[in-house]
Image (cartoon, rainbow, N blue to C red; front, side, top):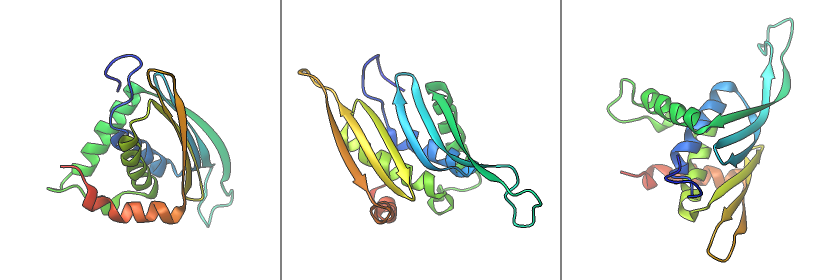
Length: 164
């Protein structure tokens, strides 16, 4: 994922999109994502046990902490591309879940900022993002907040901003 040690990560849009798809599949929410030197640490709430309406034992929320190494992310990205391209000439953006869509648009915004590393958390669809920018005279942090409405607007505009 990195061109050489200490360089910024490349293509957050696709990396975060694939992590978002994983979250959608797991049914996780209220997530925190921290970039580490060799991947990402993700923490979020997930339902454990049966959560069906007719179940005798309803599920309960648990906090899960997962570590994704760069090799895991590469595998997620390959699986996501294969899933999106399965049986269609043009990938279908409308079938993506909320986290896949929201992480993708955040990733695109993050790519435009060119950070050295990232940290963000989400609560009820709103995100607070901390980017670290490195430079010859030292680093600095940048904070940004995106409301749920901001994310929904970014998602709605995403097809027009799609890369070739």
